[in-house]
Image (cartoon, rainbow, N blue to C red; front, side):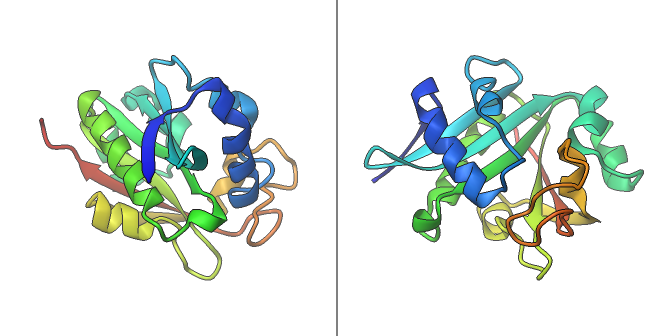
Length: 192
């Protein structure tokens, strides 16, 4: 049975192991997970399958003043619309262990994060989905069908913008520098 809860310090090694395998060796660190514990502007929810960590979702909360820093979007109507809202929820990093893919873990994480964004009174939820070089978007079904989010602009090599490595992001799909796209998804929130 899948249960969802906030991450705890003892969960970090298992979450980091999933991240290293699924997102690449230079994308998230132990510190990235630890910083979500007791933070006001971010959180990490984990999915447990009978006590074993099956996946995680790191989320960020911010205002329009951090749109450029957090999303690194080019000048576009999408960026302009985000600059006009009061509070944005970013479904930042979602990953599920290989053996648990296709079992509804990502959907349950997405739904739990959506509810948290509602409680935090976000005006818009955004996500930058990983669209690989073959055109496959990692969490497309969760975002489009589970959370009713709409895709828009795609940015080639997007993940290279978030690592300090001079050769770019070490992508598990295409190596370094990563040639995959970041695909922006968003949805306006309904009041609860």
